[in-house]
Length: 238
Image (cartoon, rainbow, N blue to C red):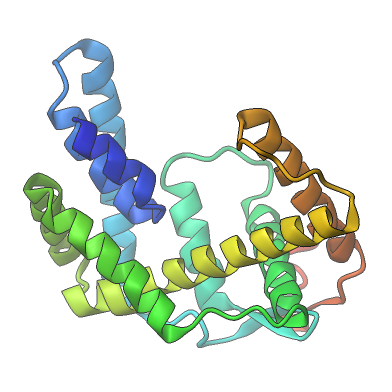
């Protein structure tokens, strides 16, 4: 169980979290609550798998119509629909799912813009190393590896498509935003707006997070956002 919990913390991909959670539940002592949770996770995974099986083209997130632009950075329909399905699968409740997903993607594009502004990059080597680390963790946990292989097959993806397309998309975002956060924190410390912590406590983490969010929010307020005329009715409440 410790190994399963470690993997859940290490793997930040939504798809992997579902897999690992199910495996972790399978090793738990049976009780009604855990059975209910396991059924819920299985239901979520089934929805995600069904989506991928019928929409493999959505893995090409930089293809298809451009829904919007944020500071010149495009949001493509494929990426929008992929993120929408992954959000709907666990039953996220929101008044307007389209606006909700658009807002999340706009914030991410602002972060990408900031990373470019600060000359922050994620190398192909760094992405590949991150993915290799994930693969190694799965290989050290055979039950999770078996479940992952089964679910990749059930999704209609090949193993190569999963790791080198879908997971590459996740890894790039995780690494880029992590580097951006670290940069903003370091600059905050240099400017005296943040204190350098001797120990990374929960309070310090929360303080740093609030500071990073405040910087991103400032750029979000001034971001140049344009919606493709073709999709303006879809986002009429935005």
